[in-house]
Length: 245
Picture (tube, rainbow, N blue to C red):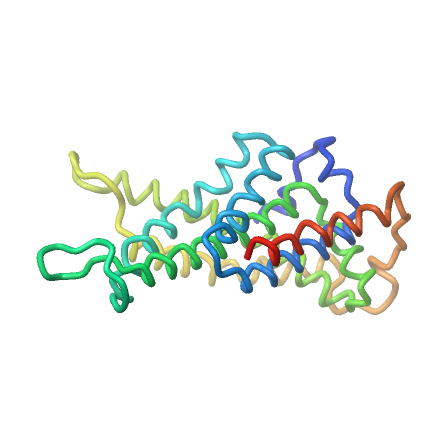
């Protein structure tokens, strides 16, 4: 597993202190569940994409979001079929394919999945692992809990990369002339690979001081310039969801 997915940069989001950045990520993720309008769904989904594009560029942004496309396709195909009550929008003869309520439901799910995933990926791409631990410690989180949380955050994008590799491998095994890849075998292979990585993950936690007593990772973080302005921006941007939502 990659220890860090941090990408060096000098964007305004890179210069943000880790504490308001963590707060903004958590607040954005929580408020995304309160959004219920189509405009709010668009802001939740595209705001992290815009910030990621400005911070790490289009290539890295596409690399991160391309891992979510299979999930978006599955949700887009099957969720409307499960919610056919209400005002019909698309019908085939007498069978209702998509309703207004079904469309609203699928956009809500996709916006939350894309928005929260994008906010977390943006945090990992613009902040070093050790700084995330220090930031979590600044919120009085125990070191063991802060270390575990940082490892989990690193584990999520690694699973996305691993799924892409499994998907490509499965596609090569298909018969010539066929397109796509089998979803269920790919997910099964990903689950098996995740289980097999448990010992390595446990060893990585131990090497970083998990379970040890002392002052590991308790070094204070210096306040940068415009520290309180960063806190204000970190709160205002997520709170804007309440206006459009």
